[in-house]
Amino acid sequence: MAETGEMAPDFTLPANGGGEVTLSALKPSTVVLYFYPRDDTPGCTTEALEFTALADEFAAADTKIIGISKDTVAKHDKFVAKHDLGVILASDAESDVCERYGVWVEKNMYGKKSMGIERATFLIDGDGKITQVWRKVKAKGHAQEVLAAVRGV
Image (cartoon, rainbow, N blue to C red):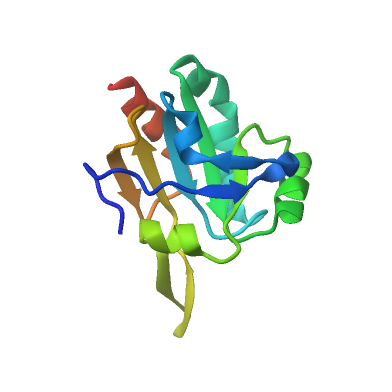
């Protein structure tokens, strides 16, 4: 499980738009890495739209935003097109990255247990170190909270 103060586990994953994203290749930029359960569901859409709305402000702070779920790149492309999203969405189909960050967890929905992605965000500095972690995130207003942390407010 990735924690504050540790080096962020590196990865290369396929991303929307047909490319790939490699965490270590984004240095020396700050990276907001957010994990979310599924494309085009209410909370996940809210979170993606809020990060998109603040994308210019994150960019001004030399910060890249990457969302990760198990959805396919094709689903990511549809999600991005439908909502005109301005963030990178990466596909962790095998949940390898989710497991390394400790967000692939047992969930209990209406008494039924299943494995899924816990909504969580990791703030990673330009050296690749995790400086802040948010777990069990509530989507509404979260992007603003992360932006405040990026700015050191």
